[in-house]
Every structure is written in C-alpha cells, then in structure tokens.
Image (cartoon, rainbow, N blue to C red; front, top):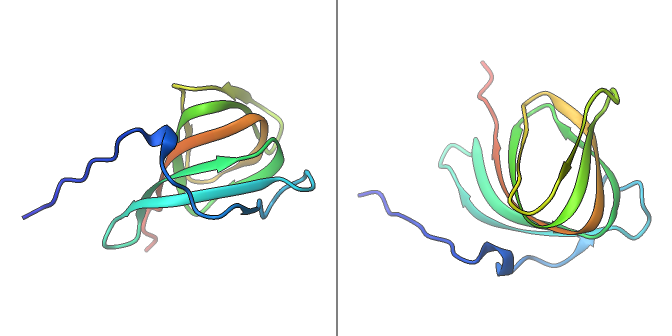
Length: 121
C-alpha cells in the first residue's frame, strides 16, 4: 500500500539549523532547510528552505528545481544576464535542469522546493 503524506502550514514548517549559504556573494548570508520527502531512487526531493537577504549563485546543471515562494521576495537572473524574474509569495518559479544563475534575496524568503534529477544513461 502507498502511504499518502500531508504537510500543512508550510510557511511555519520547522527548518534545520541556520548555516552559511555556501555560494553567497554577501558576507553573513544564512540559509536553513528541511527535507520533507525523497523518492526511493533519490532522483526527486521535496522540502522547505529559507534564506536571509543577500546574493548567491545557483547551479541547476545536474537537477531542475520547482520553487513555490511561501513568503519573502527575491530576484532570479540567468548566468548570462539574459532574463530575470522577480518572485514573491504565491509564485512558482521553474529552474530547468541545466540552468545556472544568481538569486538576490530582498526580503527573508521561505520556499517549498522540488528538485528532480533526470537519470543519465
């Protein structure tokens, strides 16, 4: 039997400990996350993430990401500078596998994420 899981009030979901954002371009920027679900094959993960204001680079060359913004505001820009999007609560941002770029967090942000890595082979 397949078990159905329900997560409610994601904006107040408990996160892990805050740590340094590893690709930050802003000294002191912090992030935290909590994994909610992972597929048996490890190709898909779903969780919640939060980050303090600042800039960081992002690399989705190995896995695409779907981001549902729960609170806060940010701008996301392609690495080549061709294309930028502002995101806020209620928005769904799709970062296809192969995307690289930069996030600018304007206001402490919470998001629900789904990361999906297409199997290579």
